[in-house]
Amino acid sequence: MAVGMMALSGLKHVRGLMSKGQTVLLAPTRLCHSGLVSEPCLTPPVCSAAVRSFDEIPGNWKSSVGNLYRFWKTDGFKNLHHIMVENFNTFGPIYREKVGYYESVNIILPEDGAILFKAEGRHPKRLKVEAWTAYRDYRNRKYGVLLKSGEDWRVNRVILNKEVISPKVLGNFVPLLDEVGQDFVARVFKNINNNSSGRWTADLSHELFRFALEAVSHVLYGERLGLLQDHINPDSQEFINSITLMFKSTVPMLYIPPNLLRRLGAKVWNDHVAAWDAIFNHADKCIQNIYRTLRHSPLLEERYPGVLTSLLLQDKLSIEEIKASVTELMAGGVDTTSITLLWTLYELAKNQELQEKLRDEVQTAWTATKGDMIQMIRSVPLINGTIKETLRLYPVAVSVQRYIANDIVIQNYNIPAGTLVQFGLYAMGRNGSIFPKPEKYNPYRWLRGENHYFKSLGFGFGPRQCLGRRIAETEMQIFLIHILRNFRIEKQRYVDVKSTFELILIPEKPILLTLRPL
Ligand code: HC9
Image (cartoon, rainbow, N blue to C red):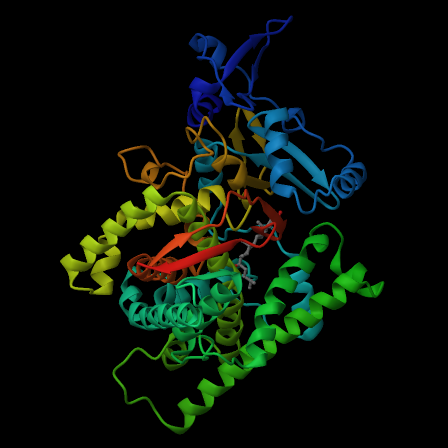
């Protein structure tokens, strides 16, 4: 059994060492700044050595309070991703950690990720974001599929999958997203024309937030919010600001119990409640609107009415359940896609040659498909590689985690069922032995006949992967196609922008970009 599991974790990385009493110990693969240092496996008898115990996993897992303090002092909160990279460099491809009240095992290798996800069980569980459930308990609101667990999660998820993630729904979303993409282009042209220089320079994040909220709302409600007009509804702006605040105020509550902070009357808790309140109020208004229209005038149009209406008509989930999950999709669909698009534009501005290659691909596909967006999406592999490449260097989530459902062996260590295992996405993306020349933004690495096994995990994996994935991917593809067909993306001068952890990874400072008509 042990031998079998070891084979899975990649024998070639395991180094055998003989100890005094002839017991055989296996040291894990080491990671250094240039990447993995691995040596070939020794003779088979050495490899069949006993698996090491959970308590032998390296790492600082003994003093949780000390770690929390060190975290605080080193600005660990906003550097979580860099700290993980350092830990892998110090301890190797597996380490144990305890910060505040949560304990985890951290892994980085794709083949170890494969073992982890095979052990996620029928009801995969990720790290519970206590702040989010505490808010819902406090306000008496239902959990959506993001926060649900067990069989309740599964029943909801299966129904939602058919509506939002099955490949069949792509055709429903494309016309809605394409309309928003075209309006974004028109808005950029308008801004350029207001400018005597014939181009437009700005911190595009605000524009992209608006684009993303407009796009996800169109898909969810089948209606436009009008965020690409000159004057926007202040409630929508508040919604956008609240999502950013909600993410940011979540961070301290990963380590300090939210209910404790609530009783102490702490500012983060109050900020967090205010942020969710604004998010829910806006979403409730949108949902009420659709619900009312639906009751008064039944659907006559042939056109896809949006996720919400479609779910209400199917009548498989309760209205409250539908509302909870649709609100999560709406809140989850703004910063995540807009920031990924911003990083992409930033990388394309730095690399004009690549930008031209992408533009060629888009133009060729456009001519071949006569602008049919559904076919277009299927004929732009480099655009799709670009999105994967952005998520490699700038993943929205630093890690993907699971509480494992059964015992597993990783790097020859036993890990008991119930343990929280975190797969370090950010650290993997920047590791030279997993991705050669990791600092180079190179979408081509996703094309060639290379091995991508467990390397593209930006949306997570399996039945618990991001539910909004299909919406996000389609939205980003369509956006990039429209932008590349119309504008050249440029950057003033060389500035290196790093990411900072505010629950999701975001740029540490504003990124100024210039758009110029072709
Ligand atoms: C943050 O150590 C770092 O679209 C923690 C572990 C962790 C747990 C849950 C993850 C979170 C991290 C990052 C943000 C994620 C979240 C689960 C869902 C959320 C990936 C990695 C997405 C951005 C969702 C948010 C939807 C919500 C606003 C309704």
